[in-house]
Image (tube, rainbow, N blue to C red; front, side, top):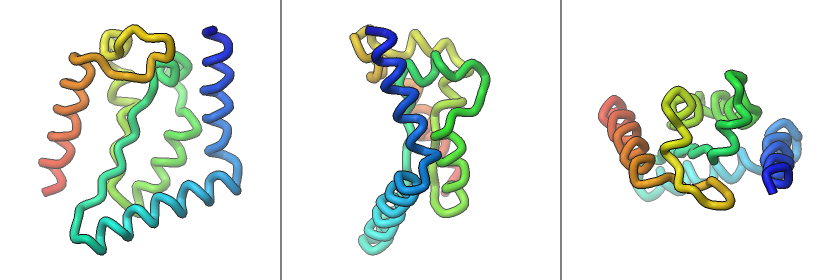
Length: 122
């Protein structure tokens, strides 16, 4: 099961460097930003890594991190990957087959990070 999940995550990471996929995702994100602005809302794109993303990180920059770092010039993006990676990240996720959901402790950590981010934006 781990190898299947790993292959899936790596394949999804590779989509961030494919031009067509990259362009499509940027278009969706820009549309989100535009709709938020039209409605008088402040758009924040929150990138929440799965547990396996962090296990595969090994102190390197993942493809999606590069993608979202470039987009930070265009809108407010909070990528939790590096922040969560520096913590005891395995304790921040529930034990499930897919490892994609934060535990209550993880939710608390994310809440504090987002709150601090928003306070610094005001």
